[in-house]
Image 1 (tube, rainbow, N blue to C red):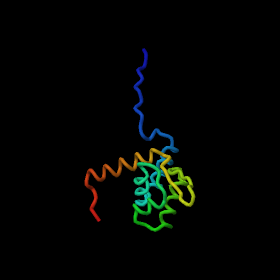
Image 2: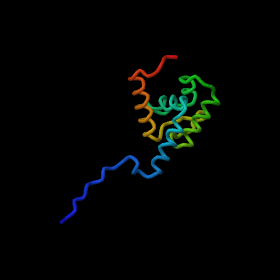
Image 3: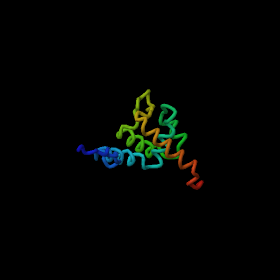
Image 4: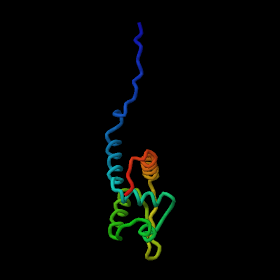
Length: 114
């Protein structure tokens, strides 16, 4: 008599530990509101630091620190043109994740205007 095998339903916990570690690192990089604002500004294309400073209320050193964190994490790419540095998103997963989460929060109205 043949034994019937029941197919195993995959579980989220069946993923390798590295998947969870990479996800945690991505969430760590995106955990600062300032970085989410930068990502949001760059969603529609490359911008220079002056443009970002005009759109986001912060100091130049603070902006540079957050841009460097995103660059080091592989989220952003950069190029120099004269004295200006231009940044762009190179990891589309980050832009999609940022857009999805921020849109969902805004749609649900789970925030208070400052």
